[in-house]
Image 1 (spheres, one colour):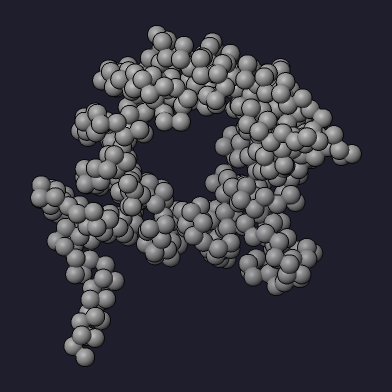
Image 2 (spheres, one colour):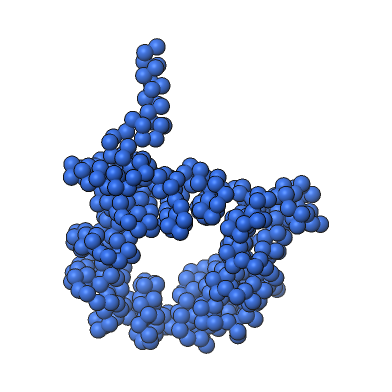
Length: 479
């Protein structure tokens, strides 16, 4: 009996949050950031075990969510949303309060895939734009085969002549594309991206052309690309003439997705399907456009040629050559921003592109040279060991500079876990720029210095604290 009681007590200790935990974990569970800062500093000087680091991050994340309030509270929830999985229970608890921060918590659960379609739908959402956005984001139900199933949403405009519950949900989602609040429209279109329901195509086209918010228009284009339907591909072609540069890039990305989702560039049948039509559009952009749309299209063609099929009527070898040449031109000349993008994305199994990156590494433009050395230092780049080590040495030297390439070089050293990276990152710990402190927390956690990363959980800025907690939680089990 005593053994049984001991087992029950131990189990209770484990599940009772910080009740039987170390002093540091108990301090993390308190709302006082000052007390936690003092306890953490004392524990750090003695050393903190990996298990305690994880428990501290969990407890502190729960506190941050429980106490989130006002504008800083919204920032906190958004920062912690990237680690909504380990903090799911705390997010659910916060979402139970029907205020703006609770709505943000509900959206985080939906984005993380930890909420069922319609889970947060409530008639209360009709009176609150924040919760109406949650309802719109919840409208991802796909065909369920429930012919004439009862409408469980509880809103009169859900009741239609459509046969299934999924069809009625899709109709309500499309109605939200026209809502007067941009956040509601954005959430509904994001739901359309996930649902990938071809019944949405006409309304998505209208949204892509007419919505006053650029972000909503771009997301509608993304949703259309995911449909991989001939109508969607051709409709995006119609939108091309009036599209902005950013929208044209989004259209090209959508066609790239349509190629993949449509089965690749298989042409020559009685009816041209979406993959073929989208591939033809990409080739047209490669041959006639410029700037970022051209680069994205060329990269898409290079990738799509791996899907070549014996039945294809296209000369994919020729298409691949044209696309590789376009990427090479983007690396060799043009605006620095575009050249950097081309270096980062170039498939270096093509000898011409590898040679172009080697030449770009000698550029006098610091950012271009840094990203080029970063590509050459990667383990999967087809260069010799000596060439890779030379690139790493160049990155170390550039990371100590103060120019446009410094951060790029430091990013690369962190990514490959170079021995010099930790000392270089630590210099940013006292930076007055929040973005630099966020980077430092992420980098230190990636480099295995989770205790130093967790120190940023005592920062005065909510996004820095949330970012640090997520960085530590994501490091669990990482070699």
